[in-house]
Amino acid sequence: MSCSRRQFIQLSAGVALASSSMPYAAHAAAPPGDVPLPIPPLIESRRGQPLFLTLQRSHWSFSGDSNKAPVWGINGLYLGPTVRVYSGDDVKLIYSNRLNEPVAMTVSGLQVPGALMGGAPRMMSAGVDWAPVLPIRQGAATLWYHANTPNRMAPHVYNGLAGMWLIEDEVSKALPLPKHYGVDDFPLIIQDKRLDNFATPVYNPPSEGGFLGDTLLVNGVQNPYVEVSRGWVRLRLLNASNARRFDLSFSDNRPFTVVASDQGFLPAPVAVQTLSLAPGERREVLVDMSQGDEVSITAGTAAGLMDRLRGLFEPSSILANTLVLSLRPTGLLPLVTDNLPMRLLADQILDGVAVRTREFRIGDSAPGINGALWDMNRIDTTVQQGTFERWIIHADRPQSLHIQGVMFLVKNVNGAQPMGEDRGWKDTVWVDGDVELLVSFPQSSSDHFPFVYYSQTLELADRGTAGQLQVNPVP
Image 1 (cartoon, rainbow, N blue to C red):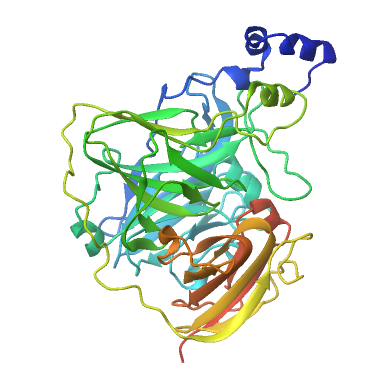
Image 2: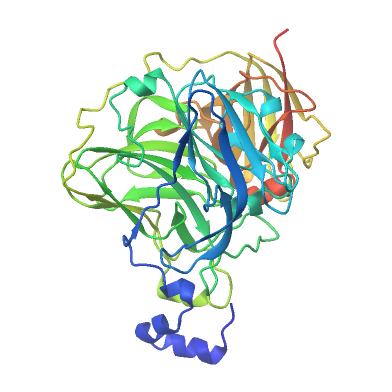
């Protein structure tokens, strides 16, 4: 996007003239709360029927109007359908790569053996399928599936290869929580993009650090709203951005009631005024709409006029819009009006005894972990299935870290106790300084099919901030 000095002077002359001179992407977005929230279709595993996920080109309108941009997606959409599976099931997936380049896929947060995790050893060439059968043997949780193509994860996720993956179990079925998908239980996939004059996504990764856009999208649109009943509403939050961390708050300063993290329910609901959401993190929150007042969730302060004008000359990393979602109560009868349960899990979260301590320094002035770039032919860490280890993660450049095939408890953040919403089992953690984890290894992996731990600043992962984890099976 370019602009002459004379045009800049004209743009700066007044707000009215400025807004009329701005490019399409800056002024064509619908006013806040004017675009209905798209709800991804729900596909479920039933009676052994396979789930088909076709990776293909598509078209999508990010501004909610008839102007559609070329994108990638799954099953003909931008992003993909929500997959819902049930603990105890064996789920057959059929991924079909109908794109013109190789792609690898994974389900972040899924507890399966390394041979079923996807990634580099399961690369699908153009026109090729991959059909794993996944044993679902973990508790209810909100996960996500996405491209994790070696050295191409950042552009592939940015293009649209991502979707939400839900696991239900007997506990989640029994709890008096909203659970009617698209009615009182909504997926919110939050991303930032940079759009050109024609509202088409532009991806120009920086030479250092991660990509930050200037347009906030939820389920692929700007400024969405959703109509809800006057009762409890459940929002499943996923940060599918390449690098941006969000701090969310309500427009009326009410607290978020957090009930679940990456790996499932917290021991009890936690109320927080501001909710952080790092790349790759998931959180489930409840909102009480019984008072009948509209409320919005925002992600900080939007860019001012001068920042927007500056964005005409150079790419901006300041969000021009920060509305995540407006919730509009209607006359619909609520499905859940009960008081929230005081406890969500019958048992306390169990700790384990660490058999050893490891330290990892991730992606500081140069990419890599402990000074080594990712190499698919090298195993960086070998552990024993069924054990616990203490992992201390250092990062001078703030970023989140994801570990495949494990679950962990955050024990310490820069010398302090973790926040209440971070005291459940997780698989992704924000690292700004030092973080201490107690890591559990319930699944096995091999040298041919290792788990990978990597920076969720996807550009850093693509540049080599990743390592390979072999979990030796119980003899």
